Every structure is written in structure tokens, then in C-alpha cells.
Amino acid sequence: MKSDIIVIGGGASGMAAAICAARQGASVLILERMPKVGKKLLATGNGKCNFTNRYMNVKCYHSRRPERVKAVLDTFGQAAAEAFFSELGILAKEKGGYVYPNSMQAASVLDALRFELERLRVTTRTNVEVQGVRAKGKGFQIDAGEELFHCRRLILACGGRASQKLGSNGSGYRFASSLGHSIVPVVPALTGLKAGERVYKALAGIRTEAVLRLMIDGKTVDAHRGEIQFADYGISGIPVFQVSGQAAYGLLEGHQVQCMMDFFPDWSSETLIRFLKERMNRFQGRPGEVFETGLLNRKLMHECMKLVKVRENGFPGVEKLAEIMKHFPATIVESRGYDFAQVCAGGVDLKEISPADCESLLHPGLYIVGELLDADGICGGYNLQWAWSTGYLAGTAAGKECHASYRTN
Image (cartoon, rainbow, N blue to C red; front, top):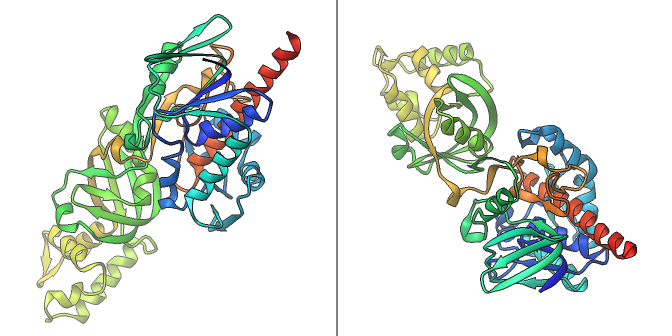
């Protein structure tokens, strides 16, 4: 079967690329291994799909080539993404910078994309398991087991390895590598972290506000504030998600990785020590439970007290307690892995990709988009923005190239 352009992967970046290519007049075929396109999109933003963010900055992304990430976002950024979806009928709603469909339903975004694919007569083949790709003649051949597909332009939009039950299985890295591309080591990102301390089994289910600092070999490399969720395996919550990719890289490279949590981030250590001393004097002679009550979640406060070895007149050593409350440790031994990750960090090295159109610098006519590339964003719509940006650039360029070749021929 022949098409002008084949898009492998019917996720966010693949659908955006197919739409933009078809708008240039190219015949487009999407090959998707799942029974339906966009399954992972339905799970984004807890089903509400914050599809971009009004605060769009390259600092919200991790990549070995941040200058190339910036170049992509400068070409097709947040405003362009909102305009793109407005054309498809999506009314945007902004909450704290996060941009959602006004319906607050991810299904609305997926439906808008599907309707546009149908209008443009993009062919979608589901339940197709691509086995391999190779350059052939002036185009590419796609091996799907019992079927072979041929195209003039190929867009790899296969996703990474995160949440495999939603569609991605890591095959895109193999396809890109088989065509000569370098792969930056891939690790899970936007996921929970497993801690070595046994205290977390006792804290499972507790949520608390804190500043979380990621420490690599004792040095702070990142910090985020928000709600920490304790689990029997360790820690979770948005602040944990934001640093999880960096933590996974630290473990991969053999470093000591720790997270320190500050439960009183608005107080200096001196202020907290003074407060605790005054509290100890006020409740002198009263049961220890009186001193503990109301400072933190009861179980969390109790565990902080247990970690203090020195006692002063029946109360915990104030300096030691303040130290624990501002530096509660989680020694990271492992991330929760790909099954629980929202995205992957790493991927095709951006030095081999043109930031103007996401075309391969090794294979003209090959485009690589979305999570396959070495760029992952923090929580808040940044990874979907990357999908729209790269999909738009690649699809538009591939479609124009096909149109130009028609005129030449």
C-alpha cells in the first residue's frame, strides 16, 4: 500500500502531524498499534487534558539540547497551539496557567482531532503492529508483518515507553536507531520514587505540603513546592514527578540520590527552633501528645518524633526535631518504572534533528516527533505542547515537500 506520508503512531503528536500534512494536500496514512487512536490522550490531566500552559519557557523542559527545544517552541508555541485548537472548535479555559478545554474533558480534544482527520480524509489503520522500517529508493518501506507499506515521507510518532498499556512500547527508538539515529539513554519520568527508609510504610496515604529538594551526591540539583503524597513504596505527588526523571538518571549513572522534604518552607531553621522551644516550655509537664498535636499530620509528626534520639525533659531535642522537619529524608533506590510513568526522559538526540521542521539530518524525508525526541516537560501541559509543536512542524513540512515534488514532476 502506498501513501505520500505515513505516520507511525496515532497519539497526540501523530494526529497533529497527520492533520497538518493533509492540509497541504498530501495523502496521509496513520498506522496505530492500539484498537483506537489517542488512548493515552484521554488519560492526560486526570481526564481533563490540560493541553498547553500560558507560562511557556524552555526551563520547563529537560533535554541535552535545550537550545533546540527553544527553537521549536519559538516557532510553534502556546498561542499557536491554542489557535490550532480554536480552529477545531475547542473553547479554552485557563486555570493558574494551565489551559483546558472548556468542557474539562480530554475526550473533547480527542474528538476534535478525530473529526478533523475525517474531514481531511486521513486514512487510519488500527491494530497494526509495525515490525521495522527502512529507507528504500526515494522513500521508505514499513514492515507490518503480513503487510508492507510504502511512502515518500515517514513521520515517526510512536511515543516512548511510558504507560505501555496506553499504546507506547518503545519500538520507535528501535526504528530511529535502525536508521542511524543516536538515542540518549531513556528513563521513566513524571512518576513516583521508591525510598529505602522503612518509615514510608507507616506514612502511606498521608499528604502534606512541602518543598522537595532533589540531592545528587549531596548537592541540590532541583527543588519544587507542592503536595507530597506518601506511599508504602516511598513518595509521589507533583513535586516528586517534576524531579523523577533527573533522579532516574542519577541512579542510572551510579550516584547517591536523595530527596529532602521541608515541611516548614516559609520558616527558617532558627525560627522553627525558637517556636519549638517556646512550645516545649508552654507544655512542660503535659503529655507528649499535647506537644505534637496540630503541627503536622499526626502520623507524620509521630514519625518525626521517633527519629529524634535525644530527649530534653521528656520532650524531643528541639534542634534535632527542627532539622528533621526541614530535612525529612527519602533515600531513592528506584523509580516506579515505565508502567507508572507519564512520559520518558531521553530519546533521539536533537542534534540530529532540524528544529525548523523536525526532519532528520541523517535521512531526508524522515521526521521524528513527540516523546521519541530527547525533550520531556514538567507537569502542566508541557509534554502535550511539545507533541503539538513537533507534530505541526513535521506534518506541515512533510506535506509541503510532497506538494513541491508534485509540481517538479
